[in-house]
Image (cartoon, rainbow, N blue to C red; front, side, top):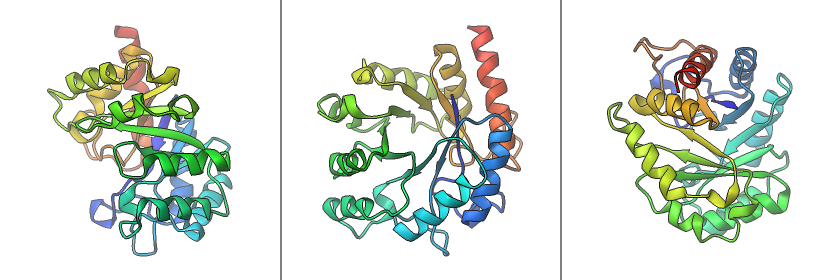
Length: 244
């Protein structure tokens, strides 16, 4: 599986190719699926371009994308999207969603992660357990009774250095161990995005590509859209598998 990560916390300052409105996200999702993406991860945005857990905005975003594609659609629940809410209030915000995504990511190192994950599971929404390198997320997840219930684990390599990201990724996978037997999606960011994607190919793990993780193609050229990154990701992923 190659998921497309449409925008992440990026905004207008990152370039006009980053989709910020529901319609732009839907257009970008359709192009990415045509290029080979089989799953979507998106950050719904306020009109000012900020990440949000607003039921109205989540509904508009998910509905717009579903009108264009027939693959699963997932959203973020990152604590930064509602920085003024305590963990209980953030879980309540999720429970107030009127249109449910197929899945949502929950960063396990964040306060209230289990409350948010439990709310999603109760709603029938799949949980992507985000385990970031450089945090205690892997240890917390190992001890979590919700671990066996998540949809999959996102092994998220936050090391942006191309020379060390693969090593960081291998260490993170070792920390995850069996990951409660759940499927693992491995990905990196910025300078580490392509080395980690190729490692995922060699290991036969799911991965993702898109403007959230990197603005650059493997050759260092600036990407013009998510579809271009997905096409490059599939090429790099397949090349890594053939070379392993």
